[in-house]
Image 1 (tube, rainbow, N blue to C red):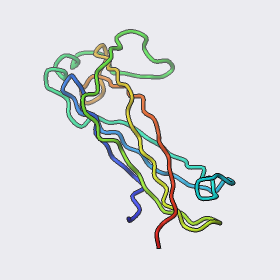
Image 2 (image 1 turned 180 degrees about the horizontal axis):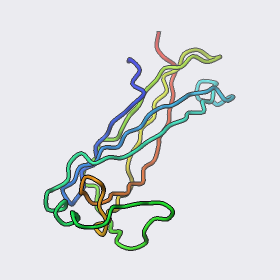
Image 3 (image 1 turned 45 degrees about the vertical axis):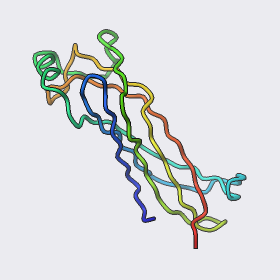
Image 4 (image 1 turned 120 degrees about the horizontal axis):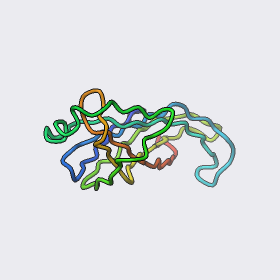
Length: 144
């Protein structure tokens, strides 16, 4: 399979919004022994979330609210859980050469919880979403 170091997934929420979760493999370094193919890989990844679609009713709700700024500190008020009703995890893939041969390294990012804040708005007049996700990393020797 060809390298795809950037993966894009989708998160559909109970409020009708759809978010994109993106994962990017920045670097892979051999970092010692493991029983998984005789090699351990240190995998550097980055991820982020963006809105794909937000219902007009939610945009209308926040259009006159102040712009969200997470620094120097997150606002403490206004956060509410939003259920994940459907999800396609983001999956990134790259091939690396090591002292034990060539390996396919895969990183899957999956959201585990989402909150939103309608006391603030993002610059495109959308509620603020905050997503917690996990990375699942694996590798296997390439075939051939």
